[in-house]
Length: 479
Ligand SMILES: *Cc1c(COP(=O)(O)O)cnc(C)c1O
Image 1 (spheres, rainbow, N blue to C red):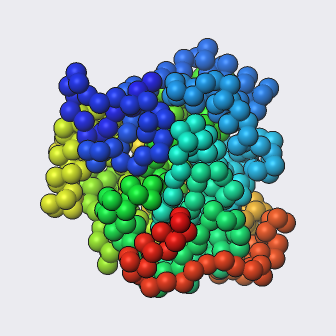
Image 2: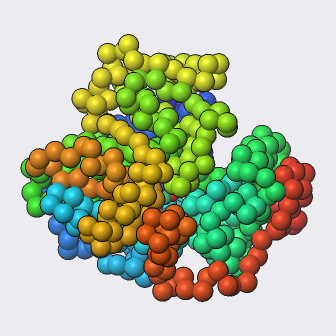
Image 3: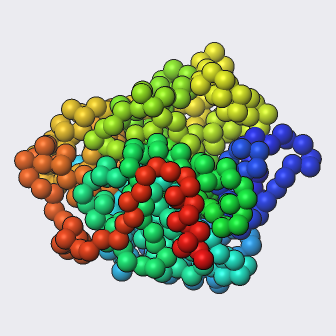
């Protein structure tokens, strides 16, 4: 399997890379995103075999089977060992790894949030940690991950990389702006290779620091700076596996179809669903659920993709979906346009840069987003989330988090007879406790392993939003 950029012109000399060549990279050099040259196909017999693998050998082996279709440059025995080391009962809390919770007839919630940081990002990041350590060890190299987080990404990255050989993490976050639980989770880490940096300012100030450091090519090279953001192909690939596991658990025969509803921000999670569907997994609809930051909902309803400015980006009670643009969206548009790299480039490099938007509403291809690719969408407001959390508690007796509430609210608008709907649970309620208190009048349950976390000692450096200060800090740690 080889990988190409979404912006590459389709010529015979098109640059094609192997998995490990793109593993540690973000964007392709031309600014595009990497995708496999073609999607491996899972026919009926192969799906039956994967069903058996999941039931008899478990999630780690299912992951190994699916990853093997996309990775040619890691020996099979090593890849299998990496999967087995990643997806354990110990790390994910259950033997099923991603158990389905039955809500009512034809409606399920797939639990993706029982990993170390209680959000679905662990599903991919835990594997990434092991892949990075493996590949860096093989090359005899080191990597310094420098990132910005408003919560879930940073903690998932730190819990994936803590104690890993050859990797350090420098994670900036806006001082005092993450939820108390998120702050406690990150700042209580004492591992020598984890460095928390609380920046005076907002999330955008943190992102500006990351951009400034990345734009200093000499510094970047000298200190081997890398990222782990959601455009990383390996993260997306790891997520494909739980679409298969969800489908297998919700069905008995391959003739059944299911739909997935996905709380969406950067389009990474639901893009993995798109990949699974392109491989032939019998998915009816992919429901893109957004909050008030409805860039994606607007596109799927109207064909207009319009990037928002800072003033237009709302702080909501499902904060991990508060985005101004959806960084993985280009991958789907590339497929929608018949894998036309030149046209993808014209939209994302030219139209977005000059006008902040593009409009496919008049293009016949746009109708294929729904008819051929199964995409539908919807959005929710704070009031919708509060109501969904309350109704779920009153009718079914369990508590869901605000992001999962976005997904459930929109899922209910798209149910079809005979097609099970699976809502992806992207975080546990304890991460966003204040909204749960608002909805239910009481604190959500805290998993036993996190009891007392807010009282633990903390390790965090407070700094001004100053590039020179950040650079000096990285240089000192790496000395
Ligand atoms: C990151 C995140 C999302 C959004 O996922 P994308 O892949 O960016 O679409 C949704 N919910 C939670 C809890 C998250 O952490």
